[in-house]
Image 1: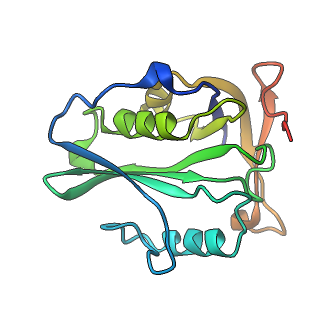
Image 2: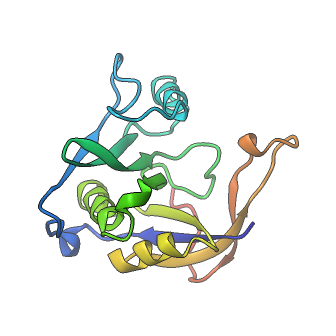
Length: 185
């Protein structure tokens, strides 16, 4: 499968703005010793990421999740992940946006864009690149990344390690700009 690699390297100031839907409630959840899963999220992979955070598998301490609710019901989540072995191209200060999900009945309403905007505004700073990796056939995610102002910086693949996909890594095979995919550590 082919993946597109997007990144954002601004300070977030040009992204400020409120969601167009006044019923949309956005928050950023951060893990704690007893805060394993974000409220309303039942996906057990978040327990693994909680472990990665507390065991310091992540090379940074900024693992968090943007949650979007309408009328108190969870309708969207966007994960923010520090670098770890699956993303060897990331510099120590970088973040990767992943595990983006929107409830089917709430898609095409700008919720993912609002959550992505909040993530970038909150986490962007000089010298940091925020990554977004999307399968080439996921046109909705591609549109969202480009709409919010992220730039496509490469095309790549997900590799397998020891024959296991979960141990593999994402790799940029064709940068689309001179600095794409080059670590800045």
